Length: 554
Image (cartoon, rainbow, N blue to C red; front, top):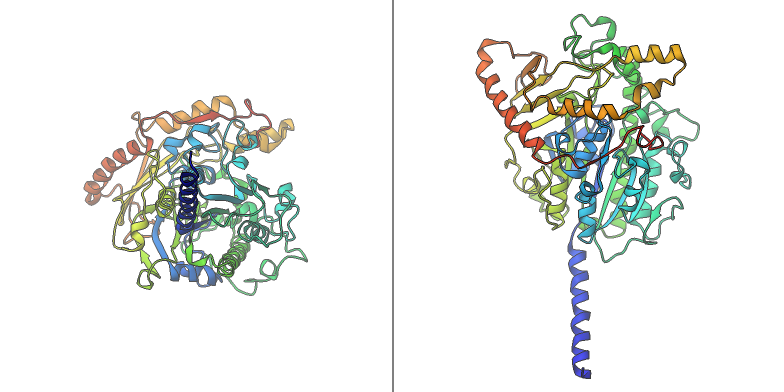
């Protein structure tokens, strides 16, 4: 091999590397922010008159606010896995009651894994509520899947150091501020290095685009219920909003005033509801929890503001897309209901903002009422990052809606609840377009939580073990819940709502003769949508129960 040839080869390789680095830097950075239990109306830009969220409002002013965004399952774990895998729960088959975790094969097609393989530097900060790998939370798969990991499995509480050692080196004590330290550590090479963080490189490489997932455990009750107004807490979490007399929600009904339950008593067993939602039973309980939720939102908002300032300081702001949404909503006593795991707007309708700084001013600050879903986040991020979308994804790329807010990606939204447990929740499924929603419910086959609690106390059994442990037979029960309607089980109750004229879903029109044509049409839509959601493949999951993994962190 002659010297001239070697010189030419060296020059070619040198310029190829330069071109590769320039291409990598041209790809946008992406920050995906996910909150927990945040109903649609908990920000100024979504109509809240009391909460202070100037940074989130500004994000909406500079991006696109989706006003008709929905989750696929209104409960934490299945919703978050649906976001990660871009699949309906029918397909991924992982929930609190499923006795399963995401298999390694399925996880390979999660959006962080796909984007990491495509050259993105990836980080995960905050909460993880997705059991992945054999052994679920203790498998170590999640920790090894990212270039930067600063998170706790399950709930992290308002004071994360009290639950997870990984956060012990943080200077702050409260959740938004601890997460903010992790964000700074990930983005800024000059920031204080957190000893607890798991990193594959000392600092973020500047020649690669990054994908950062920020996951809050707020304003969820696991966080807001543990707020203690400690002496060293920020004033936000001690006094903000406490000088206001917050109004009760529209159609609020205190427990003592419930005359006719929203759903038949043998379908939604209110007496078995989780105790964590008892605050909705009284106006005083509602106001205290609502105050804390507003405080948490202002803390989250401040992090968003700090994030944007940091991006600008590092000259990353003009090439960083920010996406903001929630895993589901929450009932706060409306119509006497508390909690989630239903298919009503209050639980499935969530805020969603996408801000791409590369867009022209005319494409900013707009609203889209297109029917979009949480499973659309993964394909949209991949598309915006120039990464091929796996065929396993069920969501839609909604990036085109950012420049054409009159465009559509689907005619109907399908949602479901398969978290039917001793806490009284029924299996339900829903389809909706922009005006009409159809919900169907199935016979509640679950055993009573109240009865389990009584026996646990009688025999000295820890109540949480009695209520939350999932054993091998539960896998079969969950599969039956999931498959029964596809195999012909008929609903025992149906609802039909005219969302245009009844957005609060107060008047069930399913039994009205004048609406039978619409009801029958949506029954056919339901059949098509649920068949599509389930797909043809067997779920790619591992057995993950108390029997298989007694120390699995269920």
